[in-house]
Length: 94
Image (cartoon, rainbow, N blue to C red):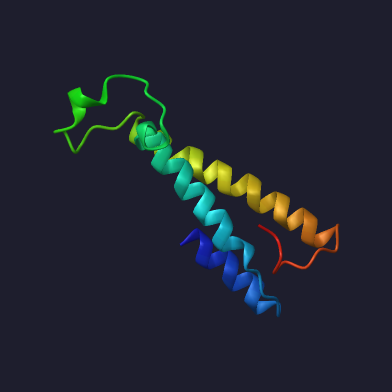
């Protein structure tokens, strides 16, 4: 929903910004790594003890929501700064 509000404002002003897809991909990757860091090879504990527990997470759920939102906000501010002050086209930003 946050992404849709931002894109609505961009489209309403006559712009097209494809970098929001990259920002949402980065923040969702951060959330996935926070839930289970073994997917990128970080062995923080023996994962075999939790293999049968689908409700186990490495982080508290409220952190899994807050930290990716902060990451997305920082990347969005960086992209917005580059577009507004750096005069870079928003279609080429990662």
